[in-house]
Length: 155
Ligand SMILES: Cc1cc2nc3c(=O)[nH]c(=O)nc-3n(C[C@H](O)[C@H](O)[C@H](O)COP(=O)(O)O)c2cc1C
Image (cartoon, rainbow, N blue to C red; front, side):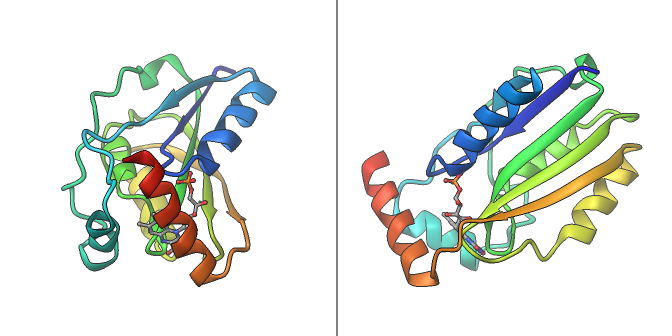
């Protein structure tokens, strides 16, 4: 079975896990990149204040063909209790007939819109075979501090 690990990562946690996952499964690894990486605190605030389901989070063209794979593993950080919004774009381009797995990486919370995401994947004619939440057990203050620190590094 050919497997694709497709991920978005802002501060590198998901990236590290995605690399390990792809290596352990002998899978192809693909990183989703925003057109503009949010690097200012205002952008982070926007994630909390704005509607995370809106399609207003442009990504660079997906240079990967989902049809080349049977199994697709999505990995993303949890933003405002949802998969980081860049994920929406990708789910829109899923072809039917794939088995799909989700691995969400958070500071401490869980994904609250799992049912909607699963419904969207099923609507595309795919099967969800797994959903894992990985919590890094950071305190909210520790998490915000960490994100701000990393955002500064990314400038
Ligand atoms: C905009 C933004 C929103 C976040 N929202 C949440 C949240 O709702 N719950 C949570 O537990 N962690 C939240 N976090 C923390 C990240 O999920 C956590 O740091 C994750 O490990 C980051 O993964 P990454 O290093 O791959 O970007 C948020 C981080 C950012 C930047």
